[in-house]
Amino acid sequence: MMLTPLEAMELMTYLQDKNLLNPELKTKLQKTVSDYRLEPKYLNARRSYLRKTYTCPFFNFKELGCPLPREIKPYGCLAFDSHHPTLKADSNCYSERDLLIEREKLHPEEAVLNEEIRKKMNLDWEKSPIPNALLDLWDKLENA
Image (tube, rainbow, N blue to C red; front, side, top):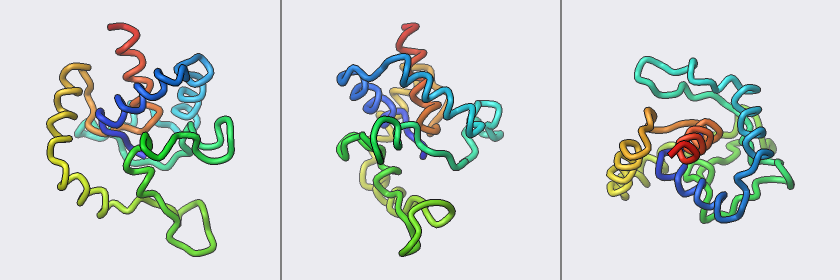
């Protein structure tokens, strides 16, 4: 799942408000990056991440499923669904990208906000895997 800067900031704010930005979460995010080889060296020529599958660091972290409330979940997570009636994981699960593209068209103001956040936070990505986006913002906020 990829996050925009706006989604990442919203998620960071939620985690901060809930007192969840702690060493345990940071370790979980770092382990996800390492386990699924999401390191920045896997960037493509346009400085964006190659889309790779990985298990979200929040899924089954402390409870079964995702603990994030619906109103804070990234749009890609909301559009993620099984496309086979009896399978719940693996290659038959993916985001409805057409729905995500249509949603982006309906909210052009988000592109402006994403660019403002990118400039203000000195981010070199337009979309990034959840753990990478959160770790990058976490680092920038700590060093601000």
